[in-house]
Length: 365
Ligand SMILES: [Zn+2]
Image 1: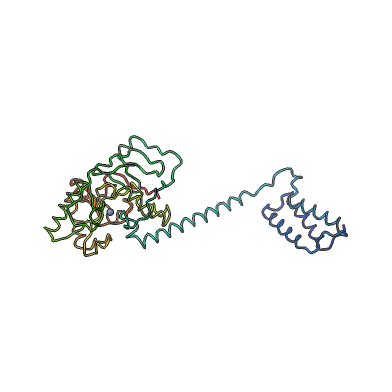
Image 2: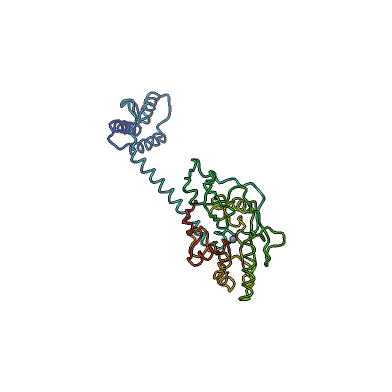
């Protein structure tokens, strides 16, 4: 063979590698690396040119290259035994990376939560909403979720929304109905006894958020007048009933601005806000500019409300230190009407509706 010195050396090494490969002397992943290295070296070797004078040796070289790059497997008549342990290691590495990414995401979300707790983990959305658009149901489950009749009656559930995985409550018009991030009203439900309580409102006349269901409205009137008569405390109704369409707009606004995941985490999905039941009213006072913020708890008005709301059939629905049970941060302003006897019971036993009904929230998100 009339081949140049460096090319001859390469050929010899290539043949040795091919032999190694056939007899599996070296682990296959190392062989593969050597293959690649040789291939690159050969391509960059200035001697590799198709010249008439070297045609024979170059053809021989090309044939050898092809044989050794394809691994000379014809001789073995079997597939290269891939080093699966190595593959597994790669998979594990990828998984680890993925879980790290997830971990980072969780950390980020938690940071956001810390920074914006007051305005995010709340039922009480900022007033601005965007265009009226149909909310696409959050895609969630492919398999049909089945729930036993026993669970249905134990948890006041009529069914499971197959699109969202949320439980549909069976008692939407009951005064002790409770909704949370796992439980929603049946489609199309709207209370039929909404009235406007005769109290101070911050919302303009005609605004649906001035409304409450009849019993809740008269209880709120008594609460407000008693607060004033007993302590000279003046409260204001900030935000009560919210129609399904309004809640849908709020939620869709979050989806448009920040995506579905964020919206699910920080906004009540349509049908899951207590304000849709007509049994909840956010209450505040002039001293905090009628804001719905945790600082309200520190005011005379806020602390009176915390100590006395139960006398009128209301509870502070999202108490401090019960976030892991209710799924919502502390909302000292969010009054929920449940009727006098249940309100007294919950107040004196420091219970949330979730605890009272023996149901602990498992966050979907
Ligand atoms: Zn509220």
